[in-house]
Structures are given as C-alpha cells and as structure tokens.
Image (cartoon, rainbow, N blue to C red):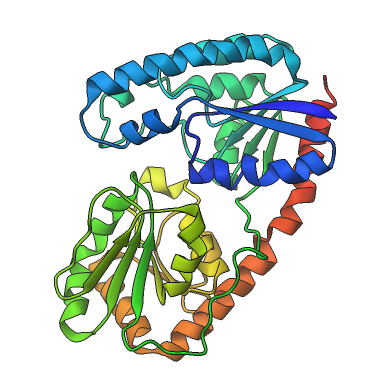
Length: 359
C-alpha cells in the first residue's frame, strides 16, 4: 500500500469534498492510502467566514501554523504529497517549500483561479497577506498539476512541467434525480451556496422582486450566514449540512446560479450548476465561466445576462412545469454523459499511479 499525505486549507470546502475526498476511497481500493490534513480546524474555519474578530482569527491562525509543524515531521512517513490549492492560506510558501524539498512525488490540484488576486469581503486584510505567486512555485515543483478546466490549465502550463485536467464529478448513485410526477402549487426557487457566495444573490434581487409581483413562488436558500429576504416571496433559509443536501436539492423546482460576469468567474467551474443538473433541477446560470461550456441555452438549462433576461427566464420556468421537467431531465442526461464520477475515477487513478511511481 502506497501512502499519500493530502494538505488543504479548509476541512469542509466543497472543492476538497468533491475532489480528493471523493477520490480517496477509490484510490485506497487500488493501493493508494490517502490521509488528509487541513490547515484550519472547525473553529478557525467558522471564524474566517465572519466579519471582524481579528484577534480571534490571529490567535487561531497562529495555533494552526503551530499544528502544521507536525506535518514536516510526519511527511517522512509518506510516499507522496498532495496539495489542494495551497497548504497554508496566508503568508509565503514556507511550509510548501520545506515539504517539497523532501524529494517525494508532489501532486498539485487547482480548482480555482488562485493565480488571480481575490479578497474575501469578510476578511479584506487577507488579500494583503496572501502570496499569489505561491501557486506558480508549487506547480513548478510538482510531478503533475491537476486542473479543473482547460482555462486554468492553460495558465498553469506556463510554469508546470506536467498538467492534467479533471473536472468535478458527481456520484450519480447518491445524487439521484428528483421526482417530477407532482407539480407544486408554488414552485420553489432554490439556491445552494456558502458563506463566500451568498452575496451573489444580490445580483438577481431586483428580478426576484419583480417576479414576486405576478407569480406565487417561494425561495429556499441552503447555506450562508445571513438571511436573503425578498418581499412578496416566501423565504426559507436553512444552514448547509451534508445530511440534508440531497433532500434540499430535491425540493428545488428551479436552481439559481447567479455570478458577476468578471474575470475571476470567467475561469470558475461552478459546482452548484452540476449539482442542480445532477438531480434533475433546471438551472438558470449567469453567462460566465463553466455554465457557458455545460449549458446549451434552452435545451438543458438557461443562461442569463442582465436583470431583464434573468426576469424573463425566471418567468418562463415558474409558469411552465413541463418546461421545468424537460430541462431538468436534459440536464441530468448531460451530467450522466460528461460528469459521472464512475467515468472520471479511472483517469484519476492513472494520474496518481504514474506520479507516485516517480518516487
């Protein structure tokens, strides 16, 4: 059995959940044991998504760095190293440099355009403490760098010796298609998000407010720290939990995926879009990033730019249950063809096996 030490910054990020943690059981069944070691514990992760509390954030970040010193000692016990995005979220690549000097195979995974400056609105100071060249240095030392899409891969190829592309993939045995045999009296507009993405709903606030004037519907938001309330629409907000995720998605009649049409999001692969589609929920997504590659507008979902187009397509889906069903079924078929976990796992195993063989 070959052993792999996997490092990441946050223990419950969707990216980690749908990448190394999804791959790990399959890798283990094929002789590669993975042990994950996130930088932040649950307390620090929760603090990072809150405004203020700089003293507590500094204290727990310092404790996290102290805990991470054990990684340097433990790394000698492994046959290879895996880094998801970056091992530490702020500061220079000190730990990454020390670890990569171990002369063990390094597999690097990038699912966001982290080579671009980005600031969490709850922690604007962290943008000044981040090392945006860290990714380039890690990729240059890696045996292989795995990228989530071609756009990010094109950037990484400038300094990484070997690049592979593995998109997020869905376990379709777990994410089953929702029941379309009954039509609800009030269709549910659904949004599944996180602390950092909740603000994207503000981009479609006005279309939702206008929609509420002539359509009876409800809005369910799954995740995020603050309520998003639209007058005239029944608002339901539930905290995100893994156990409730699929049941919640099945209650959605329309999946919302708004995002600013900016340079950062042009590189993004939006997980929520393939999650909606995987359970047969018709999606409306902003015309930016991965949705433009996945969604064929009007065939397996909708793309929208600007408030007027968002309102038009919201009205189409809210008023037409047959259209909701047909787009939902077509979306599920797209995921079955292009994003099924069962088709991606053999490629993942091949990449890891070849990289670890270099030891």
